[in-house]
Length: 152
Image 1: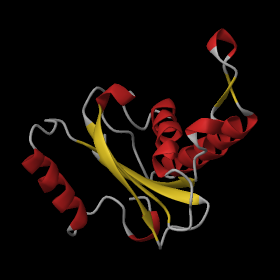
Image 2: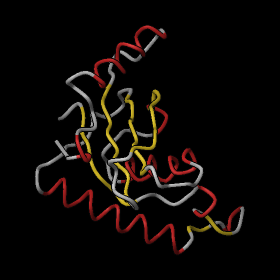
Image 3: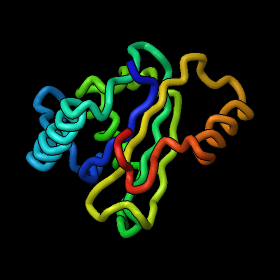
Image 4: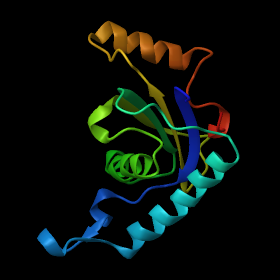
């Protein structure tokens, strides 16, 4: 199994657009269903092409999400659908293993898309210094998200 992957996906819907109704009647909205279908197909294509493999199960992991600079919505509202998709598609363990992550707007991300990378962190991160070291490795030559989010 791989210990990291990168993929470009359609821009996820806002958490405000994920569900309709409340309680037992709660269902995904048509917009949400359409996004999950499209993004799921893109992940299946990448996996079938051998361009990514899932992270190991029940191991801490970190995500790096890049949104288009021209996206003016609430950025962190996009993360819920994205993390749910990654788990649903078997790319990452359950969210309870999500150690943390970064997200930002970037000028080289194509409008209407997002670039997401995930890396397993088996030992976890126990100190702020270890977090900074992980981020430094991402920024230096071993960055998770490469130019235009190409899948590695």
